[in-house]
Structures are given as C-alpha cells and as structure tokens.
Image 1 (cartoon, rainbow, N blue to C red):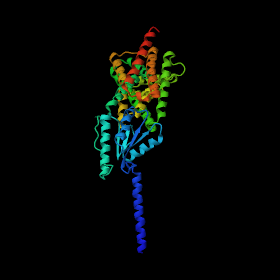
Image 2: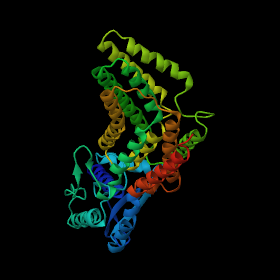
Image 3: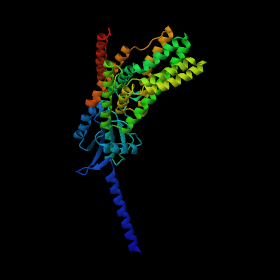
Image 4: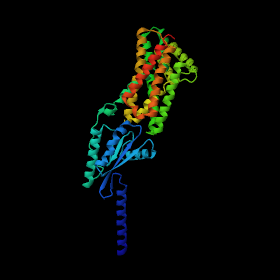
Length: 420
C-alpha cells in the first residue's frame, strides 16, 4: 500500500506539472523567449481598406525594435479569413466585439482605433511596459488596463480627430442623395395634386407624413445594407464588389442624361407609375383627414419600394464606409440616423415651399436628367475610389473633390443644354 500511495502521488504530481506547462504554453499573453526571459505577445489586427491602420502600421512595427521583449503578431484581415476568426475569438474571450480595426490585443487588454502616435501610441507603449513590469514581479498579466484618453461625443461615442471626415462624408453623400429624381417625381406629383384643394394645413400634413415615412423606409433600407456588410466584415472582395456596383449605378445614371430612360435605366419603371397615380388620387378622394393620412402612408411605402433601384447607389457606398470605420454598432446606427435626417431636409423644404405658395409644379425631363448626371458622376468617382484606393474614400478632401468635379461637370452640361 505504501508503494501504491507513492506511485499515485508521483503520477498526480506529474499530471499537475504537465498541466502547468500546458497552461503556460497556451498563454497568449506571455511566452518564454529564446533567452528564457518572458516575451509580451502583441496582436495587431488590421485591414488593407483601413486608413487608420495605414497610419498606425509604422509606429506599431517600431515597438519591438525599441522593446525586444515584445513579440508582434501583425494579422491582416481582408485577405486572411482565418485571421478574422482569430480576432473574433480573442475579442470574445475578453468580453469585447471584433467590430473595427486597427485593434491591439495584449496582456488581457483590447484597444481599438488610432488617435495618432502621441496619444494611442504612447498609451500602448505605457501599457506594454506595465505588463512587463507585472510579469517580472509575478503579478497577473491580465490586470485591467488604466483608462485610455478618448474624445467622446453624444450618440457617436469615441471619435478619432483624424477621422472627422466621416461627418463630412455623411453631409456630402446624404445631401447629394436627397436630390434624387425618383423621390422628387413622386413628391412633386403628390403636392401638385394637393395644390388644387387650396389647403395649406392639409398639404403640410400630407406632405409631412409622406416625407417622414420615406425617411423611415430609407433608414430601414440602409440598415439592411449595413447588416449585410457587417456580416462579411473587412473582406476585401466585399469592398471591391461595392465599388463595382457603384461604378455600374453611376454609369447607368450618366447614360440617362444622354438617353433619358431609354434602354437600361434605374428610374421608377413606367409600369409602376399608373399605380402611383392611382394611389395619389385615392388620397384626394378620401373623405376625411385620417383617411388621407392612411392613404399617404400606403403611397409612401409603395413609392419607396418602386424607388429601390433608383436609390441603391449612395446608401450602398455609405453603409460600406460605415463598416470600414472604427465605430461601435450604436455609433453606426447613429450615423445612419444623421444621414437620413440630412436626406429628408430638402424633401421637407419642398413641402414647406409648396404649402406656402400653394403652387403646382412637376419635375421636368431636363431637371431629371441633370439630377441623374450629378448623382451618376459622384457615384462613378466613389466607385473608382473603392476599387483603386479604398483608403482614400474616408478622407474629407476626396469627398469635396468628387463633389466639386460632379457639380462642375453638371453645371457645364446644364449650360450646354439650356436651350434644349
């Protein structure tokens, strides 16, 4: 029995020693280097389509040069799905979400975003030094990190000062998207019919409901695009597909300027216009205001479904940009809400003007062609950037440059065709 007890004790001790070695070997934060000293494992997750990753890269790669005890694992996501799976697993183990890049994971900490080397870089180096000091002193490497400096805004959360181009892009793209010939066609027709009733109150109510429902429908449409892109994460082919589709939509809209609604077009189909006219007449024939409002809701829903092809370009590009930005899910939906608020402002202004003047006006073919040309040129530029230089799409200069070129070319076209 004495021998058996000794044998069991030795086996148990051996198993415990093996388990301890196994746990140490599987520790993702600290490993023994070639000289036997502990190395801090720094995981850097980045993407080819992320401009902030490009800015962070040289500073992150310089860390092991100044701190030889840091082992850097730079893992690119768009070309390596297995790296994305690893990122998601490591983030999940820390109770975080793998929602954005650049992301730095080490010593039980996860840091997302890049505010420049003076802010984020300095904080990362300080946290790495603290991790090594804890390891040398025998403390746990997974001690909770100190609070990092951050700039926060209501609703939008943490905001990178270098990424202020996203609000600019929101304003530019939503503003251009709002001048949509399909949306203008339906709204102007509805208000022109309402003008015959000579009631400002009814025109404001009917027009206001139509604009509000259109905004909510557009938000739902863009949220669907956003979820599709979030599902595929930072895969490069998704950005390329979005760029190719944007170029296609832009080319079709530019074609419509020269051959309006001939051949392939993304306008409201002619077969759907009688249904829009019928639903508009149903609003006018309603016996009371609640019935008119209910009929307006039905018209707005139907019209927005008919406009899906006409309005697909800008929402697709914008929601793809949101998934490439370093934002929380709540921040992305907040930007969607801001986009749709800008989108409905011109439509609401049209309602106010019509109610004030009790006028009747329709969108002329020439105006529709010019609006198509403006949106098409902008879409061509955005699509080309997504295909050739996706890291430049989120820069404010690119947005203003594309808009300036599109407006200039549309102005020239308007001057050349003013007598036609």
